[in-house]
Image (cartoon, rainbow, N blue to C red; front, side):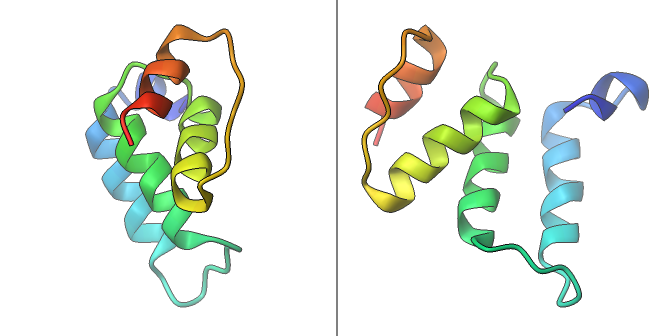
Length: 79
């Protein structure tokens, strides 16, 4: 997430802030649980957020993701 560098906050702080926003009743997201899982992964791994979404979606839906990305592959293997 770009704002971790702009606002000089760490990834876990950024993830916590976005999770709080997602949990607001006025925010509508198709799969809040998937996004929260992606943010949890983002907070503790050195991965791009898009890769975190792919990993979380795979874990939540039990679908496979094929990738050459070593970080994403490692995340997918840790089910």
